[in-house]
Amino acid sequence: MLRFGPERGPVVAAILPLFEEGNRTRAAAIDVLRRLAALGIGGALPDLPGTGESLVPTRAASLAGWRAAFAAAVEALNAPVFAMAWRGGALIDGGAELAGRWRLSPMTGAEQYRELARIQRIGGGEGYAGNRLSPALLGELDTAETPAAGALRVARLKEDPREAALYLPGRPLWRATEPGVDAVLQEAVADDLAAWIAACGG
Image (cartoon, rainbow, N blue to C red; front, top):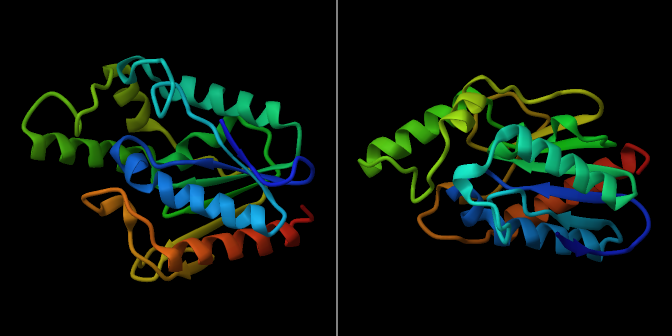
């Protein structure tokens, strides 16, 4: 787990988008955590089983396992924790004891499942953009919902017509062909998170 900012006070735990979208947005999410650290807010980025530096193969990953791992990471932080979930990452934070949930362009499980099916059709093989996923995980995703308990704030990009608390400038980095960053988006995310955490009493 990467850790940023002060040891005391509220912590933002980031959950990246799932699968290849996570690779494309990792640097941007880390930049948000660094910006929050500069504002005096702690940050953390846990590697869920089958992602990042985890030794678990992706094929062995499960949604239930991701949720349990994230909940354990939140507990280990021993602080008021606010989740920052991008896209399909919003499916992960349901089992964690959180002070609040901040989401960027969240997806339902059905939307994530359809996105994976689209990727597989484009690739023309059994994998999903290089990922080998278990049928059990695909089944979990197909019926998964994004939890909405407690303090919740949903943000979307300006061109997104769906309902949100605010609409941010910037590019959909998860759609890029290569990993990238967008300073305008990252600054907007960090500023809104900091203001929202303060409003929540964090």
